[in-house]
Amino acid sequence: MYNCKQEIDFLFEVSWEVCNKIGGIYTVLSTKAKTLKAQFNDNLIFIGPDVWSEEHPSPYFVESKSLLKKWSQNALLPEGVDVRVGRWDIPGKPMAILVKFDGLYKNKDAAYGRMWELYGVDSLHAYGDYDEGCAFARAAAAVIESLVKFLNIDPTRVVAHFDEWTTAMGLLQIKDEMPGVATVFTTHATSIGRSICGNGKLLYDQLPNYNGDQMAGELNMQSKHSLEKAAAWQADCFTTVSGVTADEAAQLLDKKVDVVTPNGFEPTFVPSKNKYKTARKAARERILKVASTLTGVNYDDDTFIVTTSGRCEYRNKGIDVYLDALRALADKNPARKVLAFVMVPAWSAGPRPDLAHALAMGSVERLGDPVLTHVLNNYNDDPVNRRVHEIGFANDSKAAVTVIYVPCYLDGADGIFDMTYYDLLPGFDATVFASYYEPWGYTPLESVAFGVPTVTTTLAGFGRWVLDDVCPGAGFGKCGVEVVNRTDSNYGEVVAKIAEDINALVGADAKTTDSIRAAAMKTAAKAEWTDFIAYYDDAYCQAAAKRDARVNKQNKN
Image (cartoon, rainbow, N blue to C red):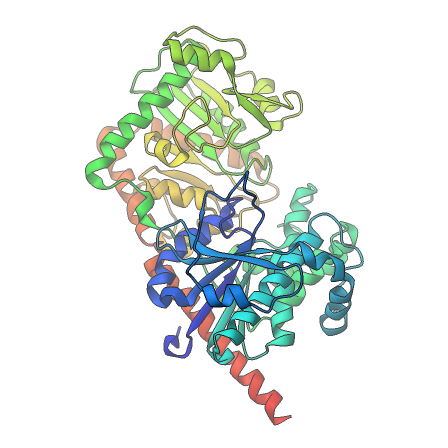
């Protein structure tokens, strides 16, 4: 890595998840921002979509009438593109511009034609959210061009960073219209790789045999794939978030990454040492109360509590493996009662009225269907609910393992727990993330940051990082993390290994448990943004260097 900070004055980062909390990319950007802000101050500007209204404003954006006031009043932007300037309400409070892009739909055909002519982007097969992503990306590029010109910034001192295929057309537009700007493109998960997994195909055993373009045609993904591939090739620096995704990109996009930029963590999310015991106690009390009220079973404080969380991607996130491992764990007759949760947002219609009422009244009586905490709109079709009932978890006083499904987003106002996920996390004794498709894996990283040992797999970027860079061989005792070898053909072995790992934690004595929790926190400390930002600095420098070489070559010609 080398340092060129003195050569970069402005950094723009464009993402659909700026001030728009959807998935893991929001966590990447919102935790990274504080460290970047310390480097660039207000020369760091995030650009996101203005998908909000007066009735439903963004809870993460604080508008300002003074920031970039002259520009916003006089910005020469395409017709139908409007902006709001303010602060992203996260640590560091970086400047953010939200862009209204609806006006660009009307001239999309001309824009798509230009992208085909210059970069071979096939927009003919577009459907779904393709037009929306491209309209936003083009509007974001127009904002960058307008700001650079209005503020009289030297383009060769600017880096523009674009995340995911939804911003890729903006990168291509910048390269066409303002080639002096250095560009970085990050794919957090290739669109075709995710589609292969989503269609139930084997990704890893067959990866060397896949051709990305061919698979895009087979899976009707030509437009997104060709756009993402073009951005990867045309960017001055192409990055992915892990070695796992780097391998995927090399095969499916035919492009080796320039830098792997792993996802860091911002420790301000974690309770301080003097508040941790109190936070853990409060979390466990609430978790146990909800479980007791739902099942009618008294769970004492010695109960071992485990969870999985994240997106409700049944196969990709390994929820299927987790549930089967819990069934195998029950057969081992664990030394303590095990209370296991599945905390993944699904199609929920709100809290169960009977459970909410019982919690309010303080009554502890077994409720009907003592598995669910919230009402499901698709009760019979939800894969988690179906599998829990198929396995036959009784959730009664005789059960060695009780499984409870929480199909809602834990934002502190869910009507049952009324605590955020981060507030509840210290109360767990372990987490399991048996991922099949996981470019990075914030959930296991968050877990160890809170001192909760975790089980993940070799198919998760975080798991690969632990094995390669932190703790060869891994293990609870060494780093608070067990990394289970997972392939396309060893499902049963993974289930058995995870059941064994959880059982080992259940049976550990207090001294061993404390040592494991301390090891987990040490692992997390190695993934803080203050360390990982160096990978991004390297990416920006490589982009600037390649831009310089590209511009010099163009000038000579």
